[in-house]
Amino acid sequence: MKERSTQGSTQAEGYDYTAKDDGTFVAVSQRTGEISSVVNITAPSGSYVITPDAQQARKEVEERERKEYFAAIGRDNRSEKFYFIPSSESFDGLSPADVTRMIYLCTYMNYDGRLMKSERIPMMRGDLEDVLGLSHSQTWRFLCAVTDKGYLAEDGNGGLFPDRKRFRKKAMKRGGIWYQKIYVKGVRSLYKSSDVGQHGQAGSLFALLPYVNIEHNVLCYNIEEKDLDRVSFMNLRQFCEAIHYDVKGLKRKLRELREITFDVGGHKERFYSVTGDGVDLEASHLFVNPNILYSGTNPDAVRSLGAFCDPSR
Image 1 (tube, rainbow, N blue to C red):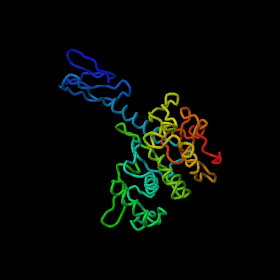
Image 2: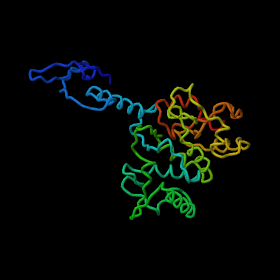
Image 3: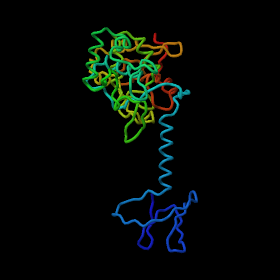
């Protein structure tokens, strides 16, 4: 907000000031014509005042950003279910397989942050084996891992609650924090189409959430960049370093990831896509399927950049 100084006082610009009969002043907004009373303020040098016009302008900007951030991703998503994870979440302390299982489990979370078997029936510890499709020992190891690391909590009645700081139904872009939108239908389809051995393969990609560009869904080092020409892409060599995998085994790793497919509207799609030939380690890049996670505004562009269909290729 710009200010101007007049006879030793400072007046906010954008207003006309009119004296009343009693000697006081009123401010008339040049933009809206709204009349506001004037107050005298004594404050240290360098202070600033937010005028009513500036407050309204800020609200309009926040609302525009909110609409942009939660814009439809190419189809009417108002009825589509999803939840949010901070983009900074790297799932420290969990195995890749447990990362996938935790992300899947959270698709059963309601708006109160509780896991539910159905709309009215809470999910309990004893339900996990059946919900996750794991053996008793695998379920027990998973439960120990996620509760020990604070990803999941259990109340006195056996109810299960994902960590609210990591998993939530509502999220906003505030204070420099970005959130990825996780789609219930896509994640469930992916999980149920994968065998137990593939949970770890999928988890190696989920754990790279801090590198997923918000708009383009490509692995990179500047996730907030919207201009594709300015995106600092993660290449395949760097991808191997990020997942602590020997680059010599990259061909095998890509083949294993390529085998992770799920149903989208009656056809199969891959969880990820590689641009380039996948041989040039410096020029090939990884895109994540927007039917699994996406918080940008143009999923069709992501689909064009990364060919997720035709898993046989």
